[in-house]
Length: 526
Image 1 (cartoon, one colour):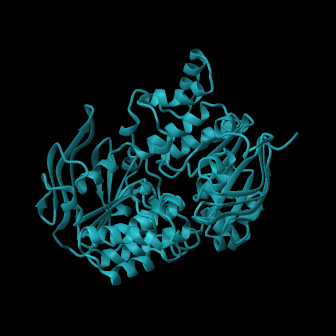
Image 2 (image 1 turned 120 degrees about the vertical axis):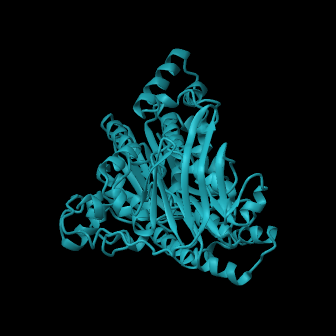
Image 3 (image 1 turned 90 degrees about the vertical axis):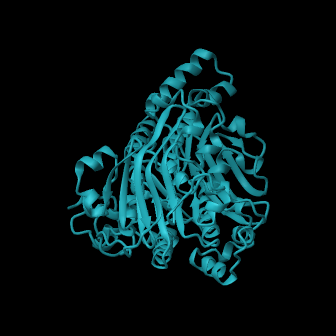
């Protein structure tokens, strides 16, 4: 039987000349479960887009070598034809949301393939049940959270019944319950014989399901084999963060896929040090940003209800909760993108009220879940200077500091639109910091970030907080937030149900269960 996917010396350069894949050769058989790992910009997303023809048909550029999908050459086969064999869920789920309701979105792919109404309806019901998104079917995609959109995008791909399912960072925006449901779905599809390809930074979510782990570094395959074999080596040299139990195994000489955690406190930490909550000690100062009895509804649906939250200068506040809990809405109210229908948002003690957005943005910077939406300049250097120029506060020494802190020097002359999602996120954070706001709001900042960039981002945030900036972070990454944040605020169904030190929140099983939080390892093994 011929392989479903064949790459033979595949080399690809984007239109700007950036080398993304360098002589990649691989074959993927029916029924394999392959995880693609590697640092941001290593070529994972490029390889996924190559598999269903978005490269070269949509992105252009220069492709050499041979790439066959179910025997079809990607150069001569259009993406709509390849989609019968390979279904791809992109890293940005909004890019795959085209219809006015979720149900119509799920029906769109099968309809484009000419299926009859009864079959289309059956497939919509099937994938909605599979991903447990039945309550979302009549919702408009624009009203969904990032995690909800991600589940819808994956369901839309599954509705095509592809032979190969390719997912680019599918766990990025999912809460603990959503991640577990996706794991169950992938396990079931694999048992049915579907070939699965997952590009993912967070191997703890998926490595134990895989039959094969491929590591990419600077566009080349540097490791390829059974996960236990690959993870037994030092994958950190390629910017890959192994699951905690694999890091322990590497030192202790035990089975690399064993989830044995006893005595692993020092080894399982995200930064290689002891696992404990050691938040930045914020000074006691008046709030730089304050939500006072804030409520917001959309289409008669309550999104945020009577929220009270504050962030002082030098404080790092983590906002946690399940998909759809209201985290993104809270942040957008904080910088004036949305205005409360009840209550008041204050910046430095002054109510936002009806102040123009540009005026609020001088004090409060926001980096959203999809950083690509913020990027518009021809180069990264231009992107970093655009905000300060508009606000007439260009400080080249400070911009240089931001470039260094965000590790942007190698990207300065590249187009932001040709970067990986992780690189785009670093650029967006740098662009906001370049304008020197007094408060910074970050929505899922570690999404798409490799281990090195997560650590670097942790240092950046710690440094700017020590310099007096208030930081509020909406995240599902409890491991990262546990080590970084001064305080957590937990949202459930639009209400803040708990606020306090991360260790105190984790010690309340009812709160953890209600908000569907994933316990950090230090707390899980106590």
